[in-house]
Image 1 (cartoon, one colour):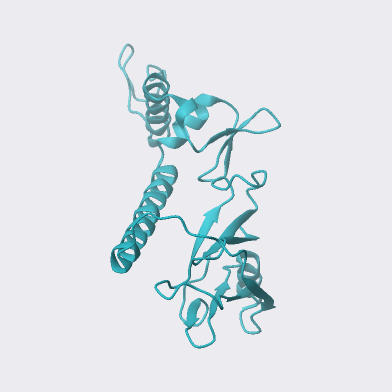
Image 2 (image 1 turned 135 degrees about the horizontal axis):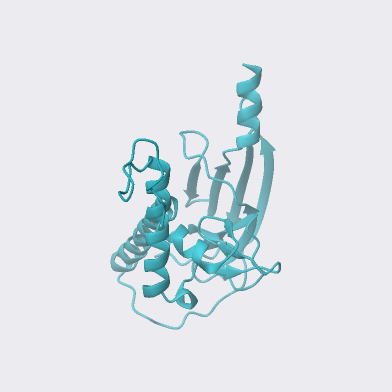
Length: 227
């Protein structure tokens, strides 16, 4: 509790005017206390203890010295905003998958896999913006006629094959009857502007193309400084 009795202009025994900074501190302390009392941190999928003994938020990639600090963070604007974005993205992906299944009239059945598809990867730098770019070309020569290939961006903590690494994320490609394939890419925001992101399914050549451009903050900052 903040002592307000000795503030300039405050009467002895009264709680003088609180600054916005003190009010924010008290607000964070109340959130931390409430979180400690009501939240089971062990069930939080974004909570992780690292090799240094401190705590990390897998969703926001922030470090915390104790559980109280982490729980206070989960009640803050940044975590809640990222949580809403994650939930919105998951709902969108679920709806897309549901629509695909309904369109194809698929029923659960065993599919005989024929292995991984052939692929090519092209890494480049945008000559104008200096942004990193990757193009994937996946060959699905024996794809099921009722299918259209699709991709999904997966965070490092979602996959179970490799050890969690906050510096990377994965792009996964799927199409029946092929095995899913995944590639590790930098954990950077994808630039969705026109011409910087696109996907294409060539039915005649049975080739699926995905082009990604990353928002490179360092390059952007250096360009702003030059300008």
